[in-house]
Length: 151
Image (cartoon, rainbow, N blue to C red; front, side):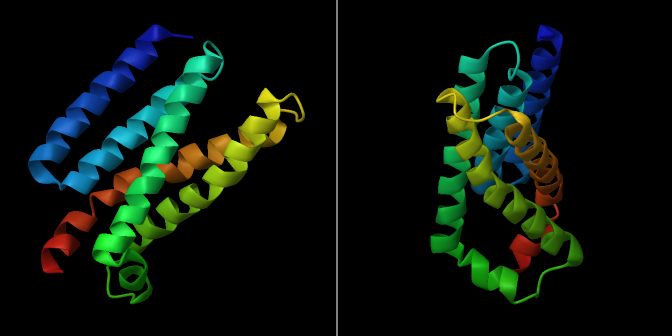
C-alpha cells in the first residue's frame, strides 16, 4: 500500500469538500465525503482489510441515507423519471443509481468473504464497478448545480 496515494486522495477530497461547501449544496458536501470515504477505503483493500471494511461500510451507509433523504425531501425519483433534467443530469442519476444498486451484491459478497464462504472474484468485480459508476456519478453530480437552481 502506497501511503502517498492515500494522502493525495485525502488532500483532493478536502479540496473538493471546500469547493463543494462554497459552490455546492449540503447534499453535495455529504456526497463528497461519502465518495472519498469509499475511495480511500478502496485503496486500503489490500493493506488493511479492517480499515477497508470500516471506511467502505461508513461511506455506503451514509450514501444510502443520503439517497433516502433526497427522495423524501426532494422527491428525487419523480424528478428523475420526469426527464425534465439535462442529459448530463440524467447521466449522473443513471451512474449513481447503478452504483447504489451494486452496493448490495458487493456488500453481500464482502460478508461472505468475512464468513469464509465465498471467493473474492465477484466481490472484486462488483467493487470495481461500484468505483467506476460512483466516480462517474460524483463527477456528474456537479452538473446538477445549474438544474437545482431552476427547480
